[in-house]
Image (cartoon, rainbow, N blue to C red; front, side):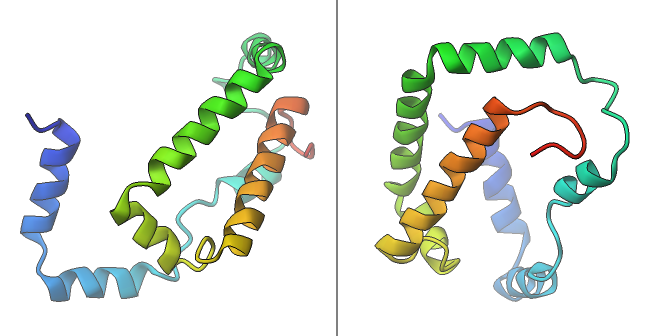
Length: 126
């Protein structure tokens, strides 16, 4: 039984020719796909959906269960990189193509994750 996501991906593959796919990749390869970091830095106020109490509770949960959180994230990463199609993409980006680049990338990810859980969610903060 296919999931809705699998059906959607199959439809996308069926609708695009190889040439259209290549063109789409070439046109969009220089586009910024996520400008939320700069948008956050430029923002002077927090978004209306931000709830400081919930944010702090999330940080407390992380600190209480830090080992479990890291193990869960490690298993998630191992699951992702054990999928051949995803591994090809990661290798193609050259951000995880060698043991050293993969180590640097995932160590930086761990660092950023720690920053998220240890700092306030305010413009100008880490």
